[in-house]
Amino acid sequence: PSVGYFGSLGKAQGIDTIVELANKNPNINFLICGDGSEKEKITKLSKKLNVSNLVILKTLDENSLIRKYSEVNILFSQLSYDFKSALPSKLYEYLSTGKCILYSGTGEAANFLNHFENCHIVDYGDVNAIDEKLKFIVKENHYLSISKKNREQIRKRFIREELVTSFYDDISW
Image (cartoon, rainbow, N blue to C red; front, side, top):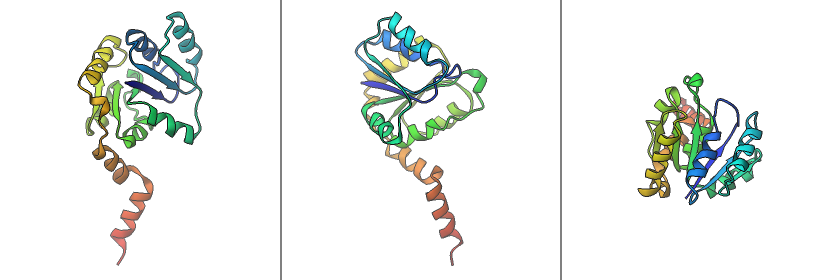
């Protein structure tokens, strides 16, 4: 199994959690793709803990990003309590893949994800709870499932081209 995080590496995301998860789970590969104010801290922590199952990459272009999405089984996102009213755009991308999502946080994003399949939600920053949920996802093989329902819901409800076509069809005579 493999876990990927794609996006900003700032304080709000608390991505040092992934470094800690990688340290606790040597049989799972981890990938972080992005840039931000916490990237150096994450890199230093990874070296300090001598984590060998974690790769940290810079922000990727769209084609490379799509390739990396295909290489991971579980997509991770986390957002601190200070941003509980936010809905990160990466969640739409994650859901459009149909892959398993592990989300650490509360508020709008957690409520949004509750309407989709194969989304696992835990409290923000609780590394032990996140680790337990990750182990559950792996043990129960949830990471192998691709949700066609999630992909379809995102396509129908949130992709602008689909919405415009639907609107146009509704008003056409």
